[in-house]
Length: 479
Image 1 (cartoon, rainbow, N blue to C red):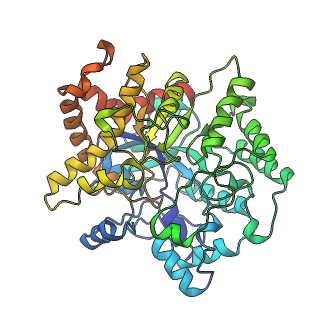
Image 2: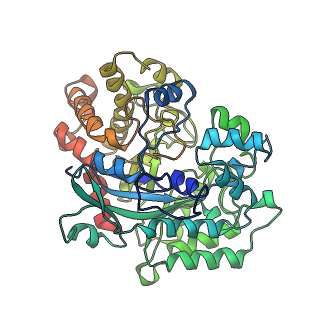
Image 3: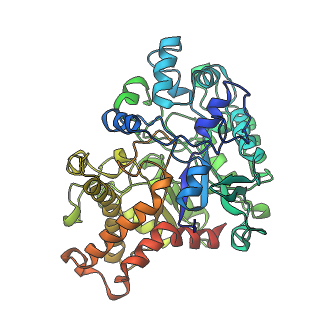
């Protein structure tokens, strides 16, 4: 299939790596029929879809490389994250009943859960996930009569030059989600971070033979580096306690890690992903860049996020009257003034395909689930369009190009609640077609009348930019 999309944030390895603990721990099987293969597809059945709609649990696979290939992926930024102990050492404890509930929620196997509960070193877990990807790097797989491979790349030129033969190639860029992977945030094991060890691990990662492009400094739980935003909901929030360290800023060790990541020696700078940082930490980071890099513009990245519709964290006012009340007004989502910062920095914003992030509860009720499939697809894709349009109108009001930061950051296989009907990466061609309908309707509506002349572009160009071109241009400038 012709390359259709670039995804800035996805987790193909979480489930197959977890399943490898049932047979050969850490082994990425070249047999795509095996559950511990990155190429193993497990499409959602009718019952899987029904379970997701009723419980929000996602047991099927969304971003295995077979599904990515069939959906038309050109580049994927895979997120190495290392499962945090806060997910598996819960209020239920660590007994067998607790493990069974955790497996139901997380979907990676009881033996993997047991391993995370017992291990005392997050960094070895990170290295295992890195090796898991490397094992089938460049290994060819036959799908529907055509050869496919994924290739881990360290420079944009490798993407631009293309494959040397007729093999269809999905280019893989390495990223990380959560600074705990440097072996900190182990309070549940009675450990305090060793600063020298943490910084040594950062150095090791920056010396990997494949370049790390960007990383999020925090995830769901306290990691002794950077404060996190509230992120959990539903059953998971009832099981897990993320209060410690929440809504705080950078620690002394966090500043040291940040400086080491941004150090550009040997062109090995690691950019920072803003997602999951608390509002306080984000504001501290913006000020840090202004003070320590006054003569350099470092691009701001949101790999998988959503807007909350408010003007700023100090002014909880919604200026977008057409989308009033449609967004999830939480601090993990991003304020309008942050969208302006991202655009002015030459940054990028990957919109997350997660119902729990992109829309308010009222808006979700309006969008389904509908028995009529076309109606469901129309309304569910509209949730993403609302995000795209809001960003455009904010940037337009500030005299900026309106359509240059929006891109895809699905967070597939990252314990999300996907949009009904767009369950996996395989539905991306279908999503593309529905998105163009929304772009066309928008440009014909009263809502678009305030757009300046240079922001009134064709619907097809808006969609192409979102699906691929904005991310492609960002990679060309920065990777």
